[in-house]
Image (tube, rainbow, N blue to C red; front, side, top):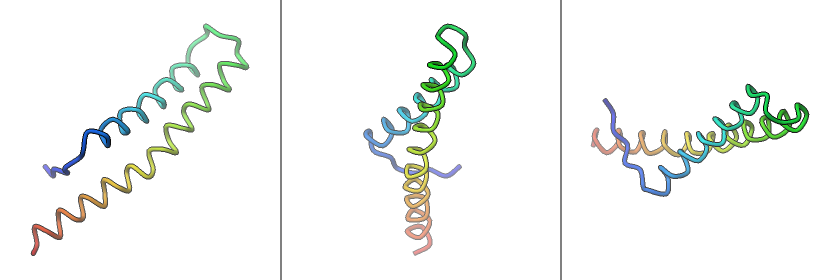
Length: 73
């Protein structure tokens, strides 16, 4: 198993993006609000979760590659 060192703020950002995406999916699947509002908020939260995940994944992959190059040296 590969280990990548992450800081507490990075872990918080990752958790936040997962929470936003999960909340968006939950709203899209629920029937508690006005359907138009629910869809608008749900898709927005899901999009925010996905869009903010991309740079975080790139950062983690960069750290993983740094660890590999350090190990090979």
